[in-house]
Length: 405
Image 1 (cartoon, one colour):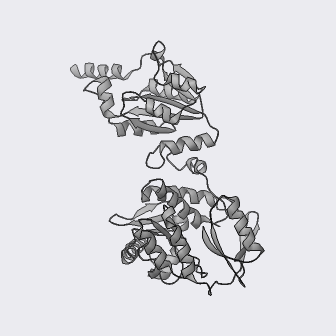
Image 2: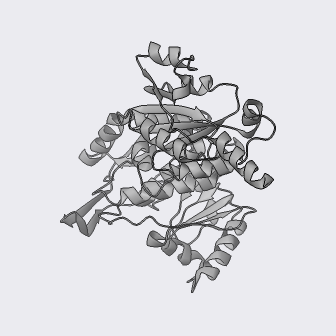
Image 3: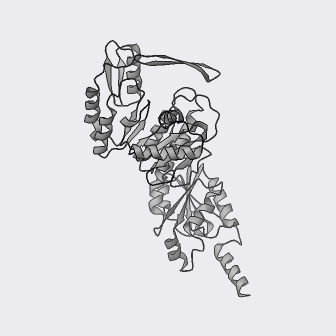
């Protein structure tokens, strides 16, 4: 973290809070300048008034600041530039170009009546008021879309993310149609820090390898949670994953490792099972319901099309992998679904280290793949009896018999 503080009690507190959070920092102490403070007056958890105490840092030499930032860029994966127009960022253009020359993405929270200084940034994130100050008032959605793409192109941005409060967000990405991300409705307690939450989660998504659109989905959920809290708050991965508006099992949103780590951090028990689940029937549903009862979260590994063919023959699967996953995702018993193409799911079992490993009752007299590994970790291995009279093979045979008549 880089920034300016005054040589005063408030500045010392800022430094202390940052260090307590374990954040590396380069804070420049300014003589004869007070640390900017914002006093919020609230009643019943709702903000009524904000009073700012501030002096702009107009006498600050931005070259000194930039040299320090540039000197640390080699250790960074991404740069966030949060512009409050208080004098800290006197030469943003140099910071953006130096980072981009090193292949480091730059995310910018803008301010002011001109956005020219943000040219060549990776992502610019204005709210509607900041956006319309630059492009003029927009009468409708079509005008917003047209002016948004024009601004993205004019500033040579890879993307423009326009936040629209209770209307959600609009992502303008190079060579793609605008992406609308609807707002998630929650009771708004305090909007303090909501914009910072968006850009922080956008950065987090990009750093862990998610696409821009996937990262925006995460940021949208995180900001919707942030406004339900009083004051400035950080939003954890567990909180985002627990959001009912998010499809937890969608691999485009969260990776398996993220899901597992978040559930472990929440102290939850993880159950694992696997199968082809070609034609989902009552037996499958009962089996998965019973498996879910053995813990808090059920992860289901599904054989991909090639591995089903290897197991069941060239006529299988009847349903494609994407169709099978979609149907499984619709079940309340499943929390995360992932496909695999290996002969066995042992690699996934070792990656997850489930608390409970489950297979069908037909495995009672067989060695269950991964059982030794799970038992060594003091886990549990269980078999669940199938519902009699239900199997995919039986269903297929019945259909063929019907067709033959």
